Length: 95
Image 1 (tube, helix red, strand yellow):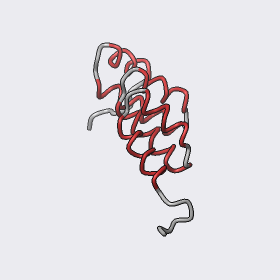
Image 2: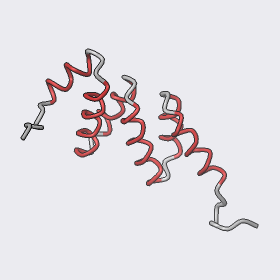
Image 3: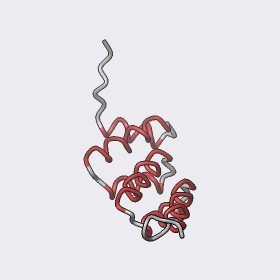
């Protein structure tokens, strides 16, 4: 069986060399730890996975400003989610 315990330092080195899978793994670790600052940094580095994870959190809390920030950082799905939430009826029913 392969040892899947990877230390953050090794993952960071791989990510810095352009390994997107390592960048995704760092995002997963940051998400599991609830480290939003690290997720935001990873998004700024171009991590699509970090964008997805941050978007999921922002949608769950209805944080429109955060969705805008994530969208501005380059994760387009956050913009789509922001539009969806803005267009939703305020009381949950259409008139």
